[in-house]
Image 1 (cartoon, rainbow, N blue to C red):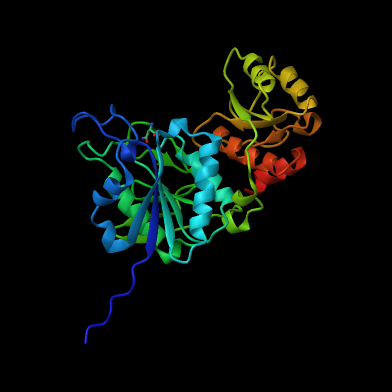
Image 2 (cartoon, rainbow, N blue to C red; image 1 turned 120 degrees about the horizontal axis):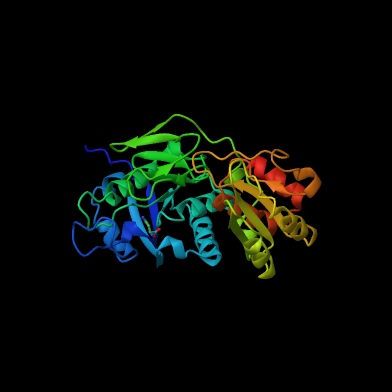
Length: 336
Ligand SMILES: NC(=O)C[C@H](N)C(=O)O
């Protein structure tokens, strides 16, 4: 008598484009190529080893380079992930994504999708046509992680270069090497030869523990990022507000410091109702504390704590969509 083999976990692969679906003219083209060319069925067929790990089915949600992701793309993708996560015939979800804004989408899903099931975002640095393309192994590792029971309840994950990161912390930190993604507080684990290895778990609120819910979000408010530098002036801040920004993220120098000629504009905009969030443009671990550098209590500004400007934009959007005032927004920056 032969025992029936255990049923393989069912993983849905949502394809959105990016370099992992990219194609170059020759195998030598690792950096010049067109993103978002290869359809989802070809992506799955290109890695036959996936079938040993899970029963994988694919959906083409978009076919775009991730620098062109809009708020509408985030909402469409988030609602699809939430709907799939409710289905009993889905054990895990993998999203293939361009790497440029992957960290924003991963954090958005981490904040808004209420599920314990593994949701894993993955990309690649080289197109599938390149020598030593990294997409195939990244995809196999992502499906392995999405199919693993021990990945449940850890929030939205990002798998790149054999590492498992929390979607909250991870950021594209190098733009040419395959070891492009880093988390300032370290990865959560590794995935090696079809097995996950965990070393830590996220402590910030996410997914089932989050007060944000994709199913309750109809639209996201305009939130813009203005970059701090030497010789700074207030042009960008005023222009964003004039165009209707409900909040401005200040990608500040150092620990979110604000140049003297910019301060009066930010105080005026705050008085007009625009939320001001001080973040930091430093890349290897920004850390902005209230009332350090600027009197946030007096000006009614918010600090992003350790979230980089692009992640601060995501949290501010979902917070304002829920009607948060500056006090609630500051609490959320400490909790998420
Ligand atoms: N490596 C990549 O995926 C970069 C590409 N520009 C994208 O984000 O879609």
